[in-house]
Length: 311
Image (cartoon, rainbow, N blue to C red; front, side, top):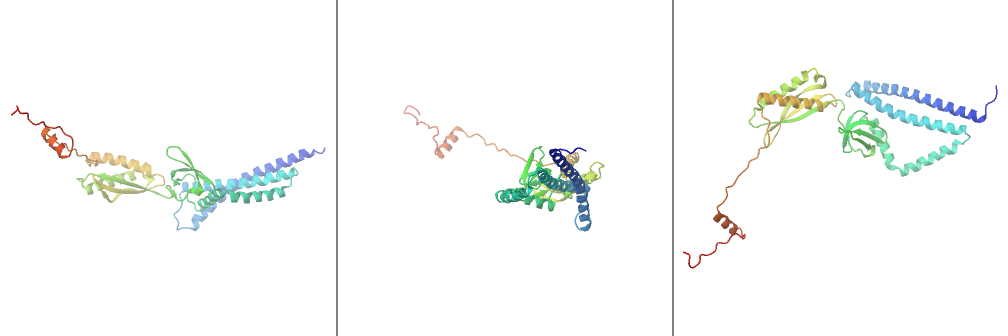
């Protein structure tokens, strides 16, 4: 068998390293998915006092951790493969590794903001503050989490705008879709309304909404009147609360408003509106207007004295 050229052997070894790296990445990605799900399920079983995660929430959590772990493992495999390939070309990788360490220290001192973003991202992931697919409010913006990494969080709001927020700028993270949500409505009625009857109508509408085949699966506790929340200028405001599935509070609240509007119209319950009172003052006579102008110090019309020929 004829011997191959040295450069051909080098190329074959480099291709072998690349193939091994690709196979290792594929296997690592599959293993990470299984390992992450197993760890989360064991954690849920070991902590029964915690509120259990729903299937959708567990899937979002697995997807978030899987993406992060795959990125880190992929970067490490790529780095090791590149160094091994350089070694095949006769390049001494020892100084290169040492140089990378020095560069890393320099970058650490010069990129403190980047390090802060990474540390904040680590705590966001470990503490499970939010995951891919959650609806959150962070750094003054809100939306659905489309992507999350150690450095930044990407949100898409209701208008479709994509916001990229560095993790180091997140002081408070408000998760609107964790575990369960709540319908929180204020409904006003006129002062001459029978409050007990209005409360009974609202409770009836909330119960009917929970019994509806379409909306019932989204509702955990039917919306009911909690209390009289305030006495306003034009009416009485009632507080309505109900417990629903995560991220369904807006849809359920909209349907509840529509049904309450129809029920109030059918039952004659008045929804208050601001009243405006207009006061019209009568026009004063000319003489009175002149006297008023003089009294205020204005330059009103002057009345000439009668001449000698006038009586």
